[in-house]
Image (cartoon, rainbow, N blue to C red; front, side, top):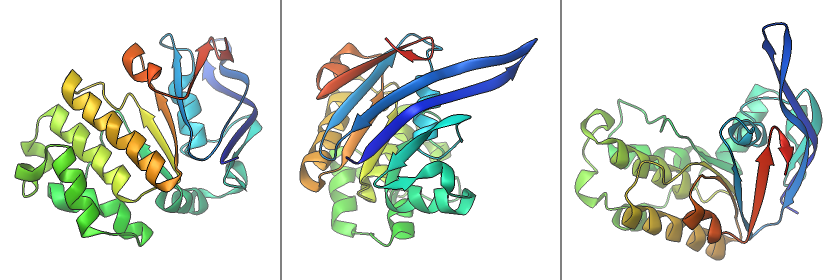
Length: 218
């Protein structure tokens, strides 16, 4: 089992007390499998993804990734986990403004010691970025920036891929190509994919779906 989430709880300060965003969530995901996380806005999907990625820590419960308890790691340890094991595709892209497209794609893989120029070139072709490699993020459209962010994550060949609405800024045809890339990487490397999505088309292509409602598994 690559990912195990056990009775995860997360609250945030709110007027008059605390707001419970996740309330005892448990789930698991094996290597080589794909899972769509769905549910209405505010159901806790993105919060769960951030906790699994070590971007936040739970109030209670446990997240185990490849045998490592994320909550037991300090900030440096969680950052190392994201470099080597977990790849995150953010909704906000988080590209580095001072690097061109080629360098942004290679950035995560270089940190992980897995830079492969041939794989980068393959990703650029599949993502339709071959003619954009010398440009900087500010010169790109939102959809192009999304594709660069996806390429950066896939370039490092992570064991667990976390994607928050990865095709939300893409047209249908490009979104289908991106999903094909995700599924191909899962098949080639035995990675696992957990994606938050409102797209029924994307969710239907996953091995399984998990629906959240008001911070619980529906």
